[in-house]
Length: 413
Image (cartoon, rainbow, N blue to C red):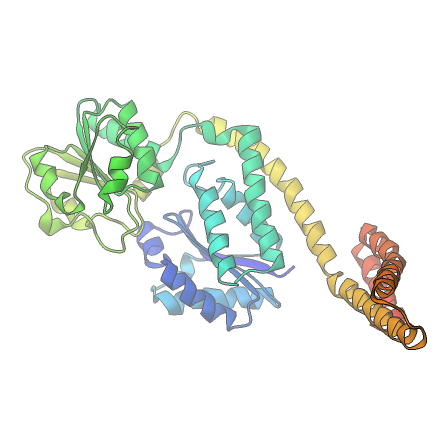
C-alpha cells in the first residue's frame, strides 16, 4: 500500500511544540522539494493551529516514515521532538486522514474548518506537482466522504467551533458579555465566526483591526456593531475605547499584541489567542489586570453537546469504514495499470504493423485509410476489453496476481 503520515497534533503536543513545527507556505515548498529529492513519490503537508502533518507515499514506507520523522527534527531543530511525533502507515494512515478531514480528530469534534484546510493543503501540493494518481484519489475521497458525513449526520450543526468555545470561555470568566466592548484582531474564517458569536451575546461595540481595512468595511452591513479601525491603532484603542475582551486570530508570523505596547489599565481585560503561531505576547500574563487564554485552554471546556457529537461520530465512522474499503479496492486495482498499459501498447504496435503492411499492398485514399484505422483499432480493443474487465472482477488478490503474470508471459509484455 505504501502510504504514511508523520506529525504532531493537539492530542500529543502542547501549543509551544505545535507552534515550533508549523509550516508557512514558503516552508511547505522548501520541505516538499527536500522530501521529493529523497525518493518519496507523493507528499501533502497539512499545517493548522492544531496539527502539523506530512502525508507521504512511496516504496519502503516504514523507512520513509522514519526519514520524515528525522526531517522534522533536523528541519525545525526542536529538542526532543520524537516524544511528540506520531507515525502511521497504510490503513492506519488512511483512517487518520479520513478522521481528520471529517473533524473527528479535531479539538472540537465535527468542526467545519478542517475540511477546507485539508482540501487547500491537497490543492497546494497538487499545483506544485507533489501529488499524483494515488494521493489525488485519496484526498478527494476523504473530502467527499467528509461532506457526505456532514450531510447525513448534521454533526457540524452543533455550534462547537473553536471560536464558539473561545467566546463561551470568555463569557464564563466575565459572567456576561452584554454591553462589553471587544477588539477583534484579524478577519479570517475563525474571527468571522467569532463576530457571529459575539453578536449573539449582545456585545456593545466590536472594534476590528485588520491589515486590509476595506475588508472590514465590506462586512459592516452584516454586523451592526462593527467599527473598523486601522491595524496600527490596535494597541491605542484598548485604553481609549475601554476594551473588555480581545480575540486575536491572524496568520501573522509575528506577535500582534505586544507586552511593551500594552497600555496600563485600571480594570481587568480578557484576551483569547486562537492563532498559531500565537498572536499574543505571553509576557502579558505577568500583568495582574490581564487574563490571557490560548487554544490549549479550550481543551478544558466541556459542552453539553459533546455526548451527542460522539454519538454522531460513531455513525461517521461507519461511513468512513465503507469508503476506506472502496479506496483500498481501487488501490489494489491500480497494480494492474502497468499490465493494462502494456496490453494497449501491444495493440497499438500490432495495429501500426498491420496498417503499414496494408498500405504497402493496397493503394487507399485518406478517407479509406481512416475507416480501416478506426475499424482495426476498435477490433483490437475488443480483444483485450473483456479479459481486462474479467480480471478487474477477481477479488482474490493472489489469484489476480497469477492472472496478471500469465497475461504478461503469454503476450510477452
